Amino acid sequence: MNKMDLIAAVAEETALPKAKAAEVVDAVFNAIENALKNKEEVRLVGFGTFATAKRKATTGRNPRTGAPIKIAASTSVRFKAGKGLKDAVN
Image 1 (cartoon, rainbow, N blue to C red):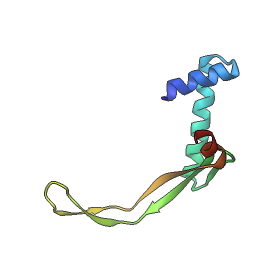
Image 2: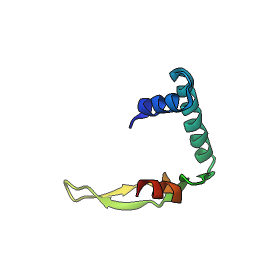
Image 3: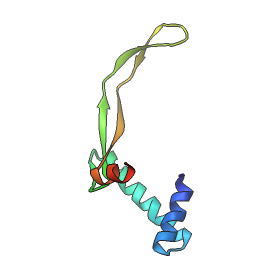
């Protein structure tokens, strides 16, 4: 499922026009993105939790040459599925 499929599903489920459903989906994504930018956790009970995690700088190897390379520290987004989502998938 891609974003357009998600918009179509939301429009069908809520009886909204696709343009309005697209605004709703974009608003939800923006709210999650802004919360994560502010280092906040997004907890959707029954669905899951989005959180940021820091990765330390490390040394890796170039797979072609075997030469060591430096990998910079970074922040990544993690998602942990909630019980409701896990139960629905199983």
